[in-house]
Image (cartoon, rainbow, N blue to C red; front, top):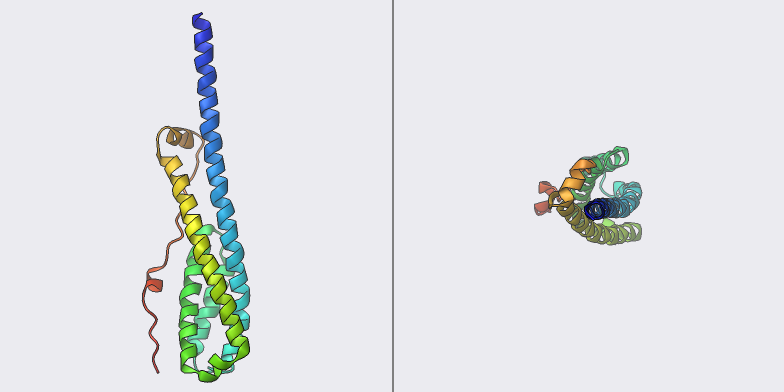
Length: 182
């Protein structure tokens, strides 16, 4: 009889470990999937930037520092090879684009340009999607991190070396208001 009880306890323990492990894998895969969704949108945004820069160049030739910042931020994103690197580059792009759009206020002809307006609208729509996706990603990371840190799944996570993910946070520079000067 004791043998059956021991076997039952071992089986229950094995099932518990399997259940916790599968829950951690599912949460980790959800984080990766949500990051992939953000990455697709960030790539679309990066692909639109050269067209936007070319449109603006014709109107604001002496604003080269703003253009260079946008191009540099885009190139940083394209060359980033980690999630953290892409997050940082994305924050740089967001800041550079906000300066570029603020710059358009100084050039009425640019604001009236249909190509610029179409690109700006498309980028603004992408920015909204990216903001929503960031929030969804951060919620998923939150759930995953809870699984990593809460007992008893934290034991299974440490045994199987589950690694934490970082939140997609707004850069301090992006929290400041953009100054438009005429």
